[in-house]
Image (cartoon, rainbow, N blue to C red; front, side, top):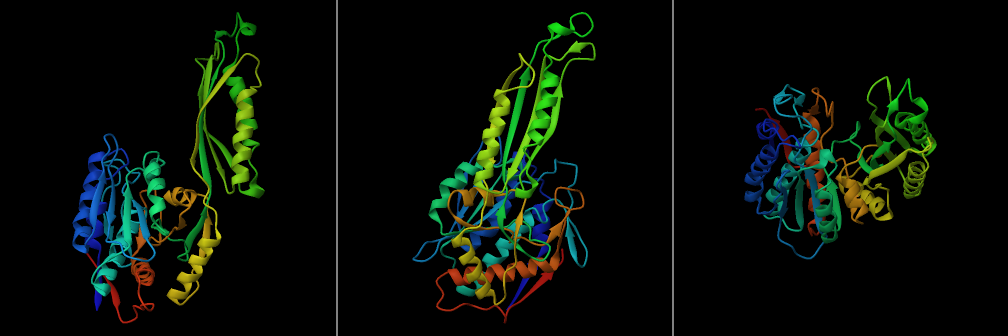
Length: 382
């Protein structure tokens, strides 16, 4: 049997702008996906949202056996009319989301098609597509965490590593907005009567940065600052936008405690400080169950599955923090994501579909591991 990867379908998704703030485009992207999932026997539950795109859950029938969730996101980072068109050549496809992560969703879709073609029906496999991953999953993470309890394993379709590694660990991330309030005064006539919020912010930037511990892969970055009125005025206010990343729970707790201490003890007397924000996504750490799953998959595939850790975050962090055994990086090999040079390798789609098909076949109650060596997966062009 020959299974064609029809990149014209990927083009249809890519050419539909689904910028995180483009609700209509995201919902249209979801509707496109529904037209492909319904023929595979999936029902669809839509979690309607007013100001962001809807989240959608595709569900199959359930029987005894492991329950699997495939996880992707519908949104991309490119506003309308910035980077919009799908293109291809013999080796690569190009366009917004071809690897992050419309391409990953496309891998999952074609693996499900292989599963359906082999078994005649799909059971115990669901797929969740959320709409706000690129902006931090502030809404969908609550839904994802709630759904996590219904499954045994989760596979996430962010892009593969440079040697088709999958992801077993990701840093956690916390973001904060720190507001500093001083007292305005004329810088020439009443210098000493002012309370300089900018000075307090400058001292705090240094202290925040010093919380970084590169030996532990912990980083603190003040990515944006603003404050003051003009050169002749003692600054009455300042603001810092801060991000902290960490690879273990102990470092998370250290950072949260130390940042709170700095906020409570500004270095300029009289300055008042407030903070908002917190942990956006918790750390994804390797677990015993996860390592056992990697070993099982390696046995199914007939070769060791390469793994890696990443500093970036994804919805895999959310699922892992909810206690669900999670593996990430099952999307295609690509680069240039979040830039106008984003691309994905055609051959990697073939490889990933082949691998995920075997994985799903193994966990769908088969008496023996199905090998797809008799099936040729080819790529068709637009």
